[in-house]
Image (cartoon, rainbow, N blue to C red; front, side):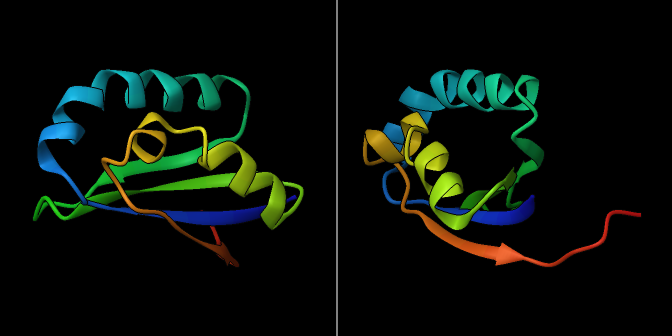
Length: 87
């Protein structure tokens, strides 16, 4: 298993507000499944980040692309494998 940082830059603030409850429910579901290790928004309102744990980049992309923020066009998406250490 590897970690993948999913950067979700703001594209549409109004859509982000509309789909925020759906996004949060989706992330909570992924936490329960063991797929999300960290999440949060940027203090400047420019978007947020989720750290996924998955077997491959393709597997992480498949999950992350289901986020309502991404599906509904509220946020962009950029995914990178992350070699990090949790302390």
